[in-house]
Length: 329
Image (cartoon, rainbow, N blue to C red; front, side, top):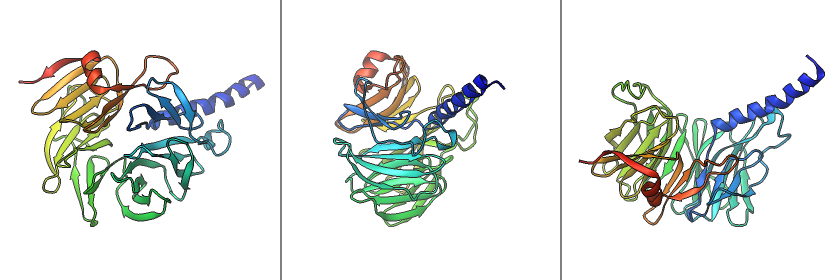
């Protein structure tokens, strides 16, 4: 191996390794004001404008040299509080796992915790912004938003996604969701296709639950797995499966949100489920959705190379960039 080739090899290997890790974790969050997002960056999470332009970075993720593969640091989860006043960021590397809380306006660090054993896979704030919930390995931690002190822990199966309502916490695993109520009682329900769908490639096996949404009235909850299979549950009396929605083609990303019904985003396909299911084909893929009774935003994959992911108003996005292809009746 020549000296020049050896040099190029050791420069390229960390870059390839870094890109691979970044592909494993692409966690983004939309601020409640719809004017900015937090998105992964090379050395730190980046705050990005509504139009997709870089605004600023949040701290330095990498604890030592960026281009040493074993020291590579990445962002595994992010979340804004419901008020938008604070931002939680989870970083990890071969040497550390940390949860940091920032003032989202000033970027001022509020506190940091680093006693987690494995990468934090999901973050969710309580609706009153008093607590921060995180899943790490086989544990769910509930921390004080004010100072980061641990208020409670729950042993769980490995968690991949998380949602918090006023009545319960929902943790997504491989093929199931656990509901944990305030008194500690829990219910686990399966979310696995009950039949094979040859056209979509879905098989009746557990898959990672990647997103969970709870309706505003907290009577329904939806979960989507990495293949695009969606389970919707009735929460009026426990957690009972009431509907399942199958993708018509394989998918590797998906989000769910409630706003006047259930919305399901699977790459360039968007479904709106109210009385019936309406399917749209869109010209861009949705990477994230943020929905409240007052606001409905989406984060779309940009066509511009090197740019961030811009925010769109979902109602306008559906009208201008999506075409109804099925549903109704």
